[in-house]
Image (tube, rainbow over the protein chains, first blue to last red):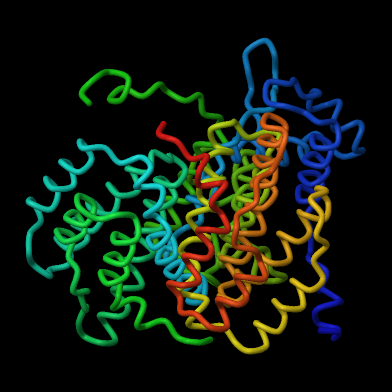
Length: 233
Length: 233
């Protein structure tokens, strides 16, 4: 891959805020700032960087949005533990993402569903199984979209919750709208939505009687219509 | 779960920029802005919201950081296709994340590795296998950290690349430092790093002769020391 387009990347037009934001992040890293540490004042940062206070405020505002800094009464600005998914959530809107990114996310969710089994089997409880049975019993067996989406969210959301991994659970709930969007697109082009042979009810049965591999194979069968649409790029 | 702590969430102290940022995102969504559409001018937004132009600039700067808006010569600000992982990357620093988040991310990577097989089998090529063999042949069989990390990144990175899913590949390369950090922590507490019975070389052999399930079982064996550390929460 020795051609100019990969070796000579186009120069991105950066605003002053872009530059200052990057400098501030490098500074925090280099000085090993940890959550709770107090940051220098706005004016001090502006003086050190040789830029206006307005630009520094703009850059700090970005870090505040990422949850990296907080302002405390009396102590001023401190470094905080950022919310790693907060800004991801802000941009995950199917209407503004490109078709390729949507397809990527669709595939990412399939990968997550297939990899989930091991974590579920470490952490599942009898109470979890009872809740899943409850969800399945309340499912409305219609293919009308609002019901189907509701069923999917309740059932698969509960599976993610069973991993007791909060990051994972939030991540999945962000991906769901994109997944739905891609499936809707399929329905529009193909006129129907295919359903795998293994149902939610079957999956609950597998959780009760089978091991992690049995459950994973059931999930693969459940998601088969989606897998069968995957193609070489 | 009808108690006050879940129903009555504490009021977050919001800055004006937080409020304006949220209003702008709601506005863009409500008016169905699509990538390429031109945004109103800074001053018009400030007038409509009844806030100073500085605050609007601060909020717009945040959207620019997320890749949601770009400034074009002559056309002014337009809505853009955001980089969904850009801001995620900004906060993924093991030193500022909490221990629970680090553990969550560690588990997320295990789930991804286990779910990867199906996508790899749809897209793998003979050239991919040759590259993997090359990587394995160059592996330095030492457990010194710098070599081990390099081997891990080269081998597992190539597996993700074989999915031909760019989002996925980038996502994994962001998670790797966190994974390493957690493993280092384990070494410090347990004094050693355990390695699974199935090696990288064995995995390549499975890719050549086995099916997706054979490969997945090999991966599970390869990651076994990590899985065996998973506990109920």
